[in-house]
Image 1 (spheres, rainbow, N blue to C red):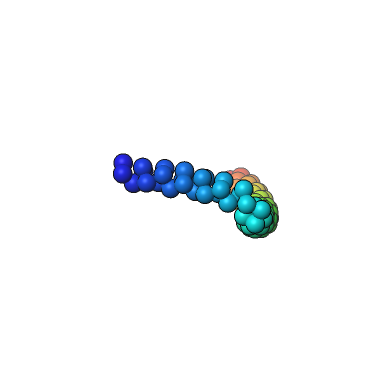
Image 2: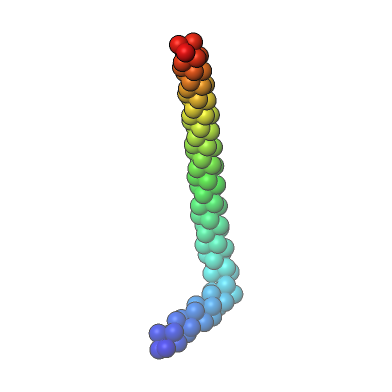
Length: 100
């Protein structure tokens, strides 16, 4: 509880100090420069985030495409095996019928 009180007092003191500094023209200029730097930093972070997000979305699309291709190949292979098994059963049945 004591730490929370000190935190609240520190925040309030910071606001009071910023208000006093902002009244002075030099202080106002300094705070404007700090605000500009913070805005520039936030813009750079936002740009980097959007770039990374686009990169990840591209990778996800590539993985999805590869998985779809693999699934299609597996389905084709399974169909080929089923067709071959049907042909083998038909040939075996035909051979059994002709030997009777």
